[in-house]
Image (cartoon, rainbow, N blue to C red; front, side, top):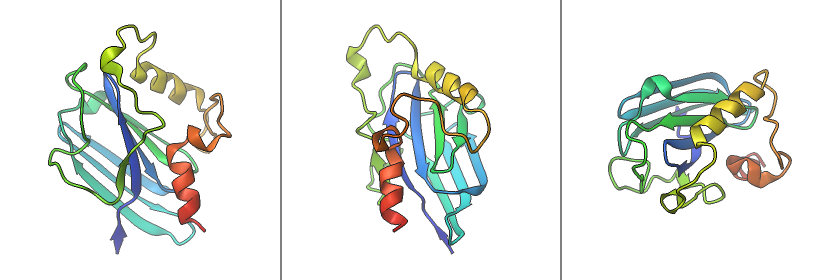
Length: 160
């Protein structure tokens, strides 16, 4: 039996970020399609099979989209096909998915911010390059802070 992994997402000028909250994931597969995101893995001490398929609100550039696995989650950066267009939701159809929530810790009203010094995508690429091996956590300010990893708090609640 497959379950949907809990996930949080947020929107930026040129990318949309989705973090699937699965601790100790293995067999991670992330497929980026122009209008769809397909995620699957096996995770946790109970080796639960997870699968999430999302019909996206707008088109993405599959070749420029990336993902990174950590011990606590799988973080995806979806490069928008049309940068500068706000996504009010992740999904094409306006529906409430019980596994998906907005990452308010990272949400930003970027439409009003005309001088972002470094794009979100560039920061994500930089973070990916600095991450070293798969099991290393990113070297970010406040990395020990639960708020730095949006799903960490939720994962910790579900792993009890």
